[in-house]
Image (cartoon, rainbow, N blue to C red; front, side, top):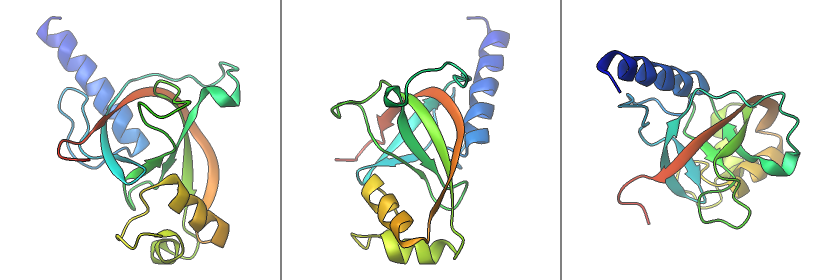
Amino acid sequence: MNRKAFRIAAVAVSAGAAALGLGSTAYAAGVSGPAIYVDHVLYRTVATPTDLSGTGAPAQSWDTIYNFFGAQPSVATAAPGDPGFNGGRWQVHKVSTPQGYAAALAAGDLDADGVLDSATEVQAAMASGTLVDDGIVKYFVCTLNKVPGQP
């Protein structure tokens, strides 16, 4: 790949990841910093400039990412190796905290580690009403890769 094409691709991938709020760190060649929790483990991603909305794919062909839009890293429902993992095809759900992030954390942080870092914790906060699923905002493809040093 020539240098100009590489730069254009890197900018497109970085812009796509930033638009999704998949992490707040700088992106090198499309690879994010720590961006998504799955079952208490932190992952980084390589976002792609894909838009899979309107494909008509059935609901079971997607895994879910809950995006907190800056309050904390996103939380996904599955990771590579999990039964039923859909290969990195995601529907991103925007979540909001009508009573504030601290209230959602108090209701959902089941292991008291200071962050909602599993789908179970997200669902506990939702059940309490302190976290609200505002619906799907994006369908796309990206990989998940464990942050080095994670279990």
